[in-house]
Amino acid sequence: MTKKISLPMQILIALVAGIAVGFIALAAGVPDLTTNYLKPFGTIFVNLLKFIVVPVVLLSMIEGILSMDDMKKVGSVGWKTVAYFLCTTAIACVIGLVLANVFNGAGLFPTLVLEEGQEWTKATSANFMDTLVGMFPSNMWESFHTANMLQVIVIALMLGGSIMAAGEKGKVAREVVGSFNEVINKLMEFIISLSPIGVFTMMAWVVATQGPAILGSLALVLLCAYIAYIIHAVFVYSLSAKVFAGMSPIAFFKGAFAAMMFAFTSTSSAATLPVSKECSDNMGADKDISAFVLPLGATINMDGTAIYQCVATIFLASCAGLQLGLGEMITIVVTATLASIGTAGVSGAGMIMLAMVLTAMGIDVNMIMIIYGVDRLFDMGRTCLNVTGDIACSLCVTKWEEKKAAKTK
Image (cartoon, rainbow, N blue to C red; front, top):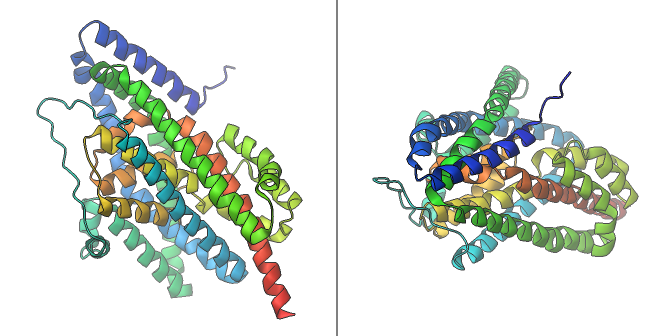
């Protein structure tokens, strides 16, 4: 029996093949062949991504809100955990945006040559109050139709909260959401399985029409993301462990190293859970607290993904010739932070979330295929970062609960 090639390997092969075909078409002086005969298949794949984004965000976020109902049962541990993750995710967004803008300001991110007759809708800066007002929908179906992602997120928050508040009478709605969410996840898995086709066709087109310079730009955006990952791990996670748990940064990284390396190679927070649990317990985390915090973190702690979304959005905006203002930066932070409440737990969900942010920014989702071929390299770093944050949170919550118990004595 022949062993099936894994999806990441299929994507890597498609990436290399696409680059090779693009170079051949460029050398032969026939780049139009990739535009006319390959790019349409990539466009079909991107259309499927656009199709799935709204239902994935809506249902996965409602499911995430409903899962928080259980946190009432675990009391302060649950809410301290959620608060820690949301705060660190917001900080991660800011770090990612700052680094990406530094790289972009230094001229390290490219502007692609547009196809003849193609125009980009320029982003316009909005003040905070306009952004706030624009988050709240007046017509739910219009929000879905226009894929207004901030409004979709607010709808998900309100529906999830209302179902939770309805208690027993909302049981049927809870079951319907869970059932539809499972169906949409299966559909998303199918669409993600088509990734190699999209990567091959779009990379061939990009290389043939833009030349080899785009490959150097991908290396730079990877560098930018990894610098942000390292900064966040050192200045947020290790410092929070130092300030709240009294552990030195060196001891923290030494204790978490095994889980970090396992996450880096496996790109799966869930698969890393046994190693993360052992590391946390050995570092002094309460076993019951780590047993709660780590699985929850594998679901809602998306700091690495938040950095990836911010860096990738600035990079792709630059490729599209867009300059994002303060209003757009605020929107990215709000969107990425709120999206961390509930993210589909299947491989490839990070790309769906990136498509969501691009849609919120008014950036053509077709641009996502420029970066998706090297998504696995981003994924290694962001998963490692997420697992590191889970361990740091377990240590901090343990210390907070110990102090709370000491005060009640």
